[in-house]
Structures are given as structure tokens and as C-alpha cells.
Image: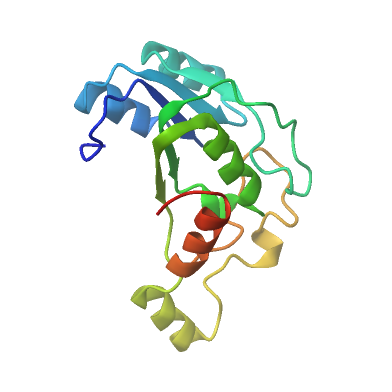
Length: 173
């Protein structure tokens, strides 16, 4: 956030629960931007907590390829300066829809801040070599069978896979 050279007037937080980023933006960075949290299954207490931080909550599914998706609504924000997608992409059965929605919601020159585990890091490679098993979630524990609002990991990505999806969806990395 500190490296962004332009004023931040609007923020999208995809997968906003548990609200840590909103608190950091408001309390640590003292940014009073329009803030929209996107996700599913937000409790009344969480909505109140976000309201106290002046964060609007928008419930919609971001993964229409999930085994039983909820309603996918049009995001109510355009020309956002920043979008957080932190530790979310690994939960999606197909990240293209979500990345396209983010791209449509960001202004030209807007910033996507994305974090996720890296399947090609030394720890994962060592675990695969030692155990002979994939670091990806077993299919029985994955989004292939789970049907609730909270979504388990679907798969882990390597850097080159993320770059492919981001470039495919129109992002400059």
C-alpha cells in the first residue's frame, strides 16, 4: 500500500473476512477510502464490526464454477484504486471469473494486491519429495464435494501459473 503513488479513494477487499485488512487500512495506514468487502456468509457481528470501520459489505459468490454456487451479483463498484485478493485465489475452483470481476471493478492503472501459498516453494517441494503426496487438498476435503459458504482450498499455485491467469485476465504484472 505504501508503494502506491496515487491517492487511494476506493478499495475492494475480496474475501474480506475476518476484517484484518480493513482494520489495518483504517487504523494503521489512516486511509479513509470508500471500502467494499466482498464475500459470502458474513455474520451479523462481522457486519457490525465492518460498519464500525465504515466498510460496506456485499455478499455474492465469486466462484460460479463451485459445485453449488450461490448467486453471483454484479459488483457495485467501478474505478476502484486498489483490490485485495489475499489468501483467496487458492479457494476458487476457477479463478478467471473472480479475476475478470476485479479487472472490471478497478480503474485503469488500479492495483491488485494478491497473496497465496506458492506450491513451488522449497517447503512444498521438500514435503512432496519426503511424503510422495501432493500439497494440494485431498479431493474429499476440497471444493469438489464441500457445499457451504466457507470454501476450503481447491489448489495451490506456482508463480508461473498465477502469472498466466493474471495475464490472461488482462493484468500487467
